[in-house]
Amino acid sequence: MTIQTEHIGMNRTGIQMSPIDSKAMQDVDPNMMSHDGGDESAMAELRTDYIAHADALGSIPLPGTITGAVNMGVQMLKGDSPQILLDKLGERLAFERTGTRLYDALITKCEVMLDGDISMTIEDLEQIRADEARHFLLISDAIESLGGDPTSQTPSADVVGVESMGLVQILNDPRTSVAQSLHAIVTAELSDKAGWETLIALADEHELSEMVDDFTQALNQEREHLALVQTWYEEAIGLTYGDVELDNPANAGGESIAP
Image 1 (cartoon, rainbow, N blue to C red):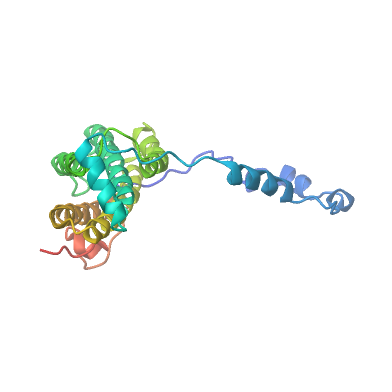
Image 2: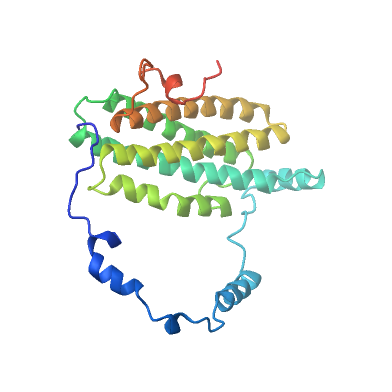
């Protein structure tokens, strides 16, 4: 892979590519542009009706064990919201599954296109992929420890599944470059970092200290991932910082990692 330099080609998507026709399109009879009272209100009214009568986006499944059901009931009686924690655990589970697949796709692409022009290696990607897989198992165990079912899809898991579809398409598109693929990975890692921060706060509210410790370790790993992929992306598009060393992730806009 060479440093990404987009080639100039016969891109006909812009209006400047056909100045004669575009001028004719803009020279419209003023009478045709008269305001007839039409606006977006009809569409907004239709959407409002759908929103008002729509069902919820799924539900939190009841615990599949008696112990889990009792624990959830006790927590709810205390004023806690275990269903929110389970929903967000389901969200992270879905996202870590997708993250593993994203790195699988990037590894496949780099096996064909990577040639040493940037500091990223296949071994680096395999290590991050292994971290994502471990995080998936960590969340699965956490859900089971609360009496939940990690195979169920919670509402937030449904949402992130839809959110991630575009990222999966980018990574699996054979036309996208390594740089373009890394841009999608940066987007995923930014979202992943924010998700772990939310999950840690929820676990802390429920006084689940062991989960907080495990999730904090996972968050630190995700911060490392983000710093690395930001660096690789910047290298891939030829971005330099003068005397700044790009092989130091902290110099590429990444966060310092707490010990």
